[in-house]
Image 1 (cartoon, protein in one colour):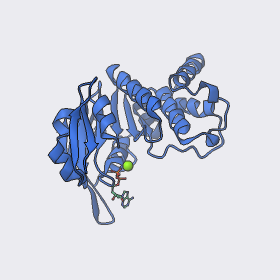
Image 2 (tube, rainbow, N blue to C red):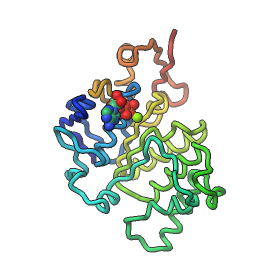
Image 3 (cartoon, helix red, strand yellow):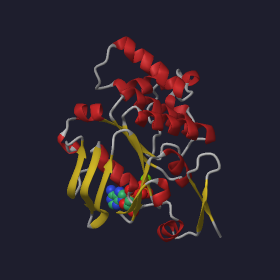
Image 4 (tube, helix red, strand yellow):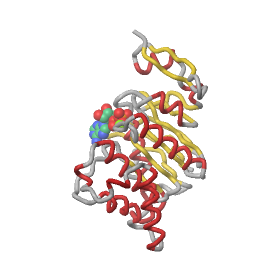
Length: 251
Ligand code: ADP
Ligand code: MG
């Protein structure tokens, strides 16, 4: 379980996050949504322990991440960054293997996990390619495979589907939801409200560093609220198969 208690963050005299309290339970997918610059990635970086809050506390199973060593952090939480471009000329399979760095698993279990993770995101054929030569979507899937191999109770994804086509968006988010069903705590920054509505159990809506709504997709994706927060007219409909909300823009 991941908990934020009245978390604020000030950088250079600017309040980027203001008194955010949020519980992200194990066994569920929580999507962080909100307009550009609302503070979603910043909030995820606090959850990851990459930044220290100016006030309040972040708790990963009752421990503040900034008190943990790199090895302890790597055992508790995996992070898929917003820009998951790979900057070194490693082979794809070696990048996925890096999920095991700092974990102590038997080597043959390693090999099987790496092969399974690559197969799940359909990058097996790319295994020997230089990771830097992959397309944006292929790189994102490689990073996702790496964090699956890391096998942590907490999984933090920053816009994991931004570079993916429809099939791979659906696949990655179904995998993430299934991961949550197995007891993991999954938190994902999601740009696309419809993907968030379809795949997350809870939505947390940020506006200017403040949490303005939190709840199920139907509770949060209320048209008047979205119009105020996004400054854009919208219509909210019902997904014909899933029964979840669908948000479309209106002129
Ligand atoms: P998003 O919701 O789009 O992910 P971010 O969390 O990246 O937004 O950024 C929230 C706000 O904080 C933005 O206005 C951004 O410009 C600002 N910001 C992010 N990091 C810093 C920083 N290190 N110094 C100053 N401002 C920052
Ligand atoms: Mg962001």
